[in-house]
Amino acid sequence: MLKIALSDDQELFIESLCALFANTAGEIEVIWTARSGEETLEKVREQRPDVLVLDYFFKGKTLDGGETCRLLLEEFAGLGVLLLSVSCEMTVIRDALLKGARGYASKDISKGELLRGIRAVAQGEYFLDQTSMAEVIQFITSAQPQLQPKPPKSLLTPRELDVAIPYAKGKSVREIAETLFISEDTVESHIKNIRSKTAATSRYEAGEWLKKNELWID
View 1: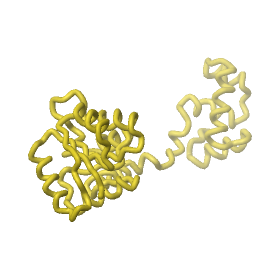
View 2 (view 1 turned 180 degrees about the horizontal axis):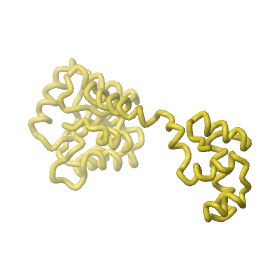
View 3 (view 1 turned 180 degrees about the vertical axis):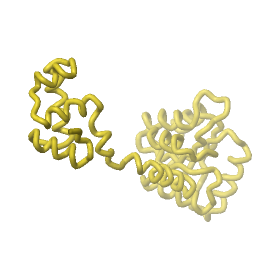
């Protein structure tokens, strides 16, 4: 039998969960309930559950669910915490997981899915309900363009491009420095960056890279 605890500041929500778990044929027992982060900390110290189902947002209390989770896991490293919330925004999901929660789900979660989540967390696995998972997938896929390689024109800074062209044409470091009114050390630093970014090992290869990417100026 899994021993779980419920922590939420909404009395009706606590009652509905207790009624739900009372109909699990003895698989799950609710050993205590709490109404705040502070009360949750005290009760876990008195009687540690297999899984703590914790509200992420406690209205008008000092500790929210995320901070309560963090404090609990500093003291009880193996405690399984499943956070529930009305919000499934990526920032909230990320914060919950970073603070040590093993699971995160919307309060609109179905009975069957919640039971699966509790079992998963009790076994030390991670769990996200369908709503939260959809948010994570949307975040990853919408951020995908940011993971694409930068276009060639953005690889070099404007100043590096000012140095790259005369460098590829055979100008000396001193000549480039005098033309651009910068020090020779600065020119050498730019050349080092240019060669690193373009993978060029010579002036010729730097010139070929510039021509290939339509950055060459005669």
